[in-house]
Image (tube, rainbow, N blue to C red; front, side, top):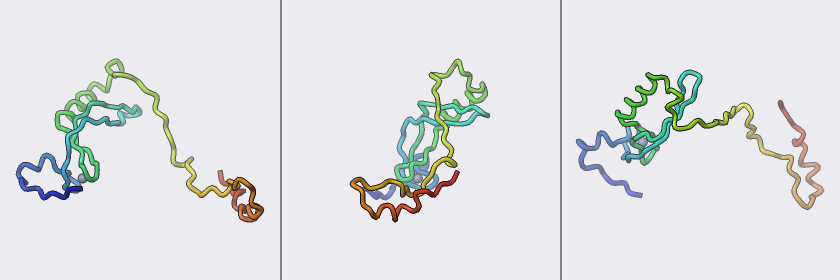
Length: 122
Ligand SMILES: [Zn+2]
């Protein structure tokens, strides 16, 4: 990995991460944003991406175009496509360690060590 020292500070400003000060590179990204109750996805967004922390900075022209779309409330007839988006709640994600998987081959000790297997919450 290169840790080059920037030698032209007057040119760097527009291409430096505002958070960590690392170099950014130009890329085209997608973004998702809420418009009231609707989630809309915007593709082909020109952005600068930090090579270190991956923070994205959108070009002014992109923000202007997004504002223009927002001004027209993201008309559905202008959408490139409409996709189905799955929604997950972290309330339903269990990160407790599973103890209820018996080892294949059957170790007789398993019955004693699996005393937590019956522990369940809603
Ligand atoms: Zn950064």
